[in-house]
Length: 415
Image 1 (cartoon, rainbow, N blue to C red):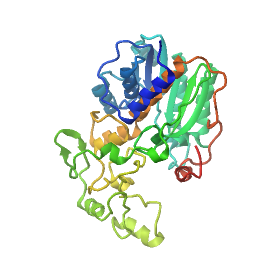
Image 2 (image 1 turned 135 degrees about the vertical axis):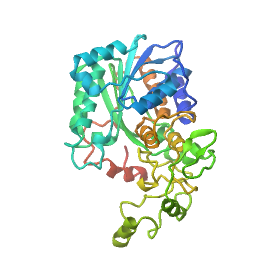
Image 3 (image 1 turned 180 degrees about the vertical axis):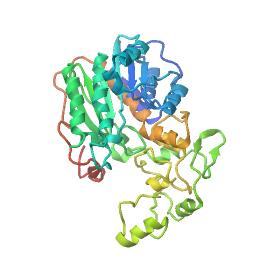
Image 4 (image 1 turned 45 degrees about the horizontal axis):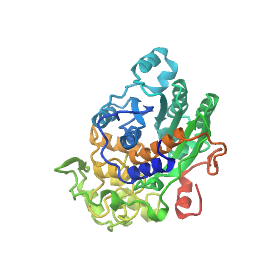
């Protein structure tokens, strides 16, 4: 008798809150192949394999990415070689498609296509959608490649800015491609902290199945979110630029003396940079404007709250609230990875900046494991007739999602 939906989701919750090391090998038996487009350092793939290690379900059939460092990280942890192909080119070039199709290792009877196309084109900091058009085109390209593979389900993860007025035309083209291929398509915005991630990370999730289905439901209320202390509190202290002897990934940037002095003046455990401390440019802004849009620069994380969103720039305390709660330094590679839901043994290839970029751009493996559990439950469930669609995004959510975050966190707005 197959496991119940509640039993599958219980496995997902367990993996999401305490992600174990990723197994090197595929499960002995699997009924669903997974193809990961824009696979990066393996966040989505790792989550699906973590779930498969606990519940026979998925196997990785192929991964595709152009980033050489990310592909090296993928190989280190998942023992598979991503295909260095351009997803957009697969839509235009028949020879590229033939090479891709020949390299896909299909064995299972069912298929899921997953991916998180690069989100920089949807950034709220961009002045022009035209300048980012090439990146935004990757979302409809993802959908076009997915439907050509004839999967049973599709999972697309991206920043919520994809759903704003500027990003909506690109997103809607992807939805139209999926619907024309016979999929039921649903989209919601989630705070990943509700799925056990020790970080306030808002992301848009689109699922497409060939029958009506339920969307994932977060399992943690705000007062039970996991915290920075939960994720990194047990890691040994280190000095700027030095690695911990037993873990070369637990290393920070080699900060300048001025950066260390600035951090030393910031109060411990969530402190904010004093207005008269730090680089001259920030002090001039403070004198002229008082508190400004740069209030979090050089700020410390709180021990007993989730982290702010971990980005590709989390290596640098000058890029936001990325300083350690009590040590006078920025985050280490290992700390950023743990806050991003990677297992504590995950390894990253490439230079220092590249490792942070891979982590910041990844889908958190812990969240991916829960999504894998939910998706497998839906693929195994009887056909639904009337799913609850309250909370689905069916039209643009405004000019900028980033402007809504403060209201969502305060409870004044609901996702």
